Length: 113
Image (tube, rainbow, N blue to C red; front, side, top):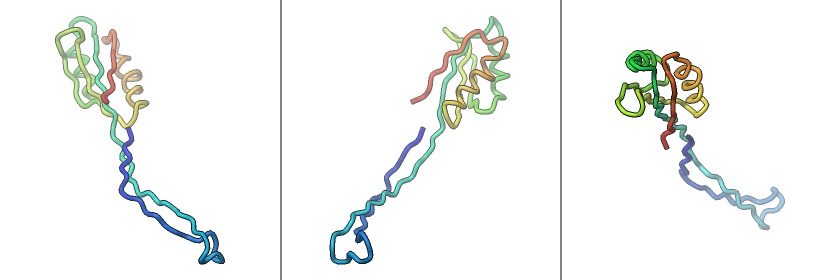
């Protein structure tokens, strides 16, 4: 996610050429801004094979980008919070690392807005 913050606007009047002094001028606008790249957060809800949620959570906690992982009660067996620089990185963590665990039956990913 990128956030662009406008810091200011400068207006410069300049002649079209050095010989055109006293004639028409061009207006040149210069915007000053800062671009801030914020990390992307995602929750991955996981269904595991019966009795393996604690094992899955323990393994996932060591994965780079995983901020938090917990076993839960309810429709899903575990929830994992991932932080990455972009959506592609989230996809790589989910599909190339987490979903390849043989004890994981299903994952559902929700991107934080």
